[in-house]
Length: 260
Image 1: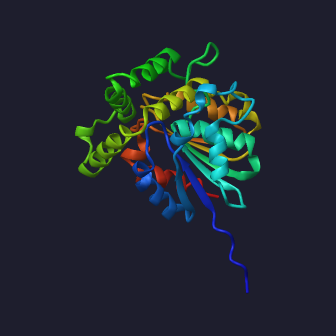
Image 2: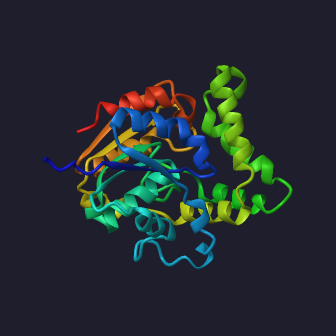
């Protein structure tokens, strides 16, 4: 009898203020298209100790460490990351290269905040202000403002009914994420910088980015495409940061063309 080959597994790593249920349509569509067993990893519960976060790069972040510990398969897995999840996925591929077969990254960046030699990001002062405001009366507004930027150029009122309802439900769920977990995620975005590791990441990395992304500029994806040895990039002119929420079917169609 011919032995049954092991099932290929994919793990989708969430973005900031995104709960796993919000990504269920994307997860199910990717499982169907790829034939993989697909799960969603929510990094938020593992970040409340980031107040004593070590200098970035010397050790894996708590998020990458938790992701690796959750990967129980004996064979390398596919990592699918969105937004903050792309940084966690790249970290994991760097520290545990034998555990990761390939990466599919949406709205990806190697460094979320701008630096003197890296203009492809967000000003750190803006991220710090968001973190401070989360503790006050503007908690709900901070998340709503972020989601408005993520949805741009779309708006809830202009989406078709299923997409609008799904995004509205996801925003409501985001408001329930504990504030310390959200703040820890913002701390991570201020610290994370995987640029120095990119030349050493030898797994195939497939980048998908909306040209109208108002959270992570498309220049960040082009930077990664140039820095990673085995990268491909596809830019969708009509999409923004929330591509996995607004049109997961089209995104999965694009991802499927990169399957080995």
